[in-house]
Length: 298
Image (cartoon, rainbow, N blue to C red):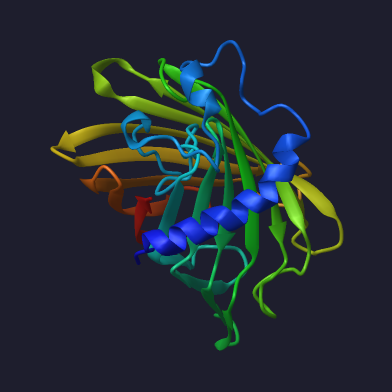
């Protein structure tokens, strides 16, 4: 998928018109005295960061741990799965569940040097659930929910051995029937990046989600926590391993733990391919997940 410079300019002008009034009503975000590169604080959506000053591309995929780094001001980044497949058989419900997403995408735009806006879309999601007791199945497919996120880097965006960001988000109930719960949900994500000796990198993340319960009768709080370690392998090929756990703080559901790993390949400084897997390590977790995708920026 490619976007022409003409269309990119048109989108930028449109989004600028939306944000210019808000920017004029107060000071720009992120202009703290601790900023690593004060010169870049003057760049905005309407005044893009020059190519020679752009930071290395950092993506929120393919691992569960989100990146602590934002998209440079005035630039766009697209992160998409070709396919994302999940299988679950080992559970207490006597059900086998298969889900797949085709081309789920996260579109990002840099608003300021340390702030980007993100829109997550699921254009096609499918699900099939088989009751092993009665040997009957139910299937659903269609458009999924929409997620809007704002990432604010607090430090380390342009240098240093650590970086921290905050990401409030909201899920909008846009899913077709049988694919969603028709309720708005949201939360707050805090990703931390750490440079380790030997050119290893570590990512840690804590996330609080305000979700509807499984019975859809009230809101509950879920705590997602992750840790990932990555390292370059050969040339532009890199790999990572990760642990992710989901704890329902209301005690409604059992703990779900996952081990996952994958590879990334930087075709160019602005294009990256990835592929990986997820394995459930607790009974409540999905048994297996497989995915592959691409990220690129403009």
